[in-house]
Image (cartoon, rainbow, N blue to C red; front, side):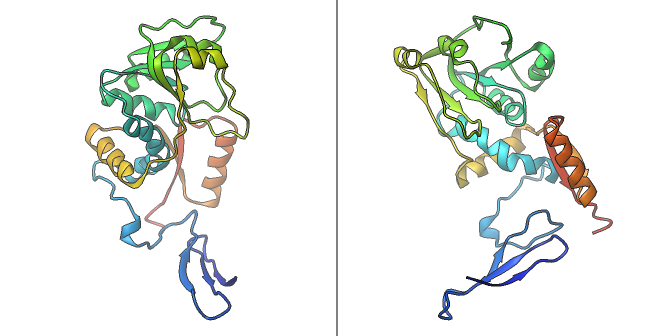
Length: 253
């Protein structure tokens, strides 16, 4: 049971646990969240390439690792065609990684409003999906990465999947994943779950991003109560493009 809790200035909190028999006491279990600094064992950290500024490295550690893991761990090849649904926090990074890996990148979004941005990020082609019964793509998709906050209309997407293709639903949702049975069966499609990258894949992601100049699109806010409040409000309102980063003012800290 916890015996002692230390919290100061919103920086680092430490818990001391005791088994009740004087053994198995952990004196340094850091639980820091919003912090100006923290001290950790180097073995548990990732070395960020010098070419990536800290404010850009932060979103890569989650969103970047999530999409890179799909492409790296499930063998997306330069000759493959990768489809990406959504151009948000995950999608705008998935476009960049897939493009730099040499794949043909088809981006799907509800309207044309983000077409120019998608092409700038590295998309090969762009398809608007709203009020469209049949999606028109230049070639069928080998890997379909779903990054939207909701499930797509699977009846639109299953016909454009290549035989033996794979769907990666990265959407975090409490609901059920519901896909038409026959479309999945007839084309021998797979649905592959994927978590944030394992440690070596994570290292590979950082090296790859540093080498190819892959950076998230961010909005910066001061690391303060006011800055965090403003950041979270913009996120809740759906106005963030595409990752909010709290930045320390080193002159004050």
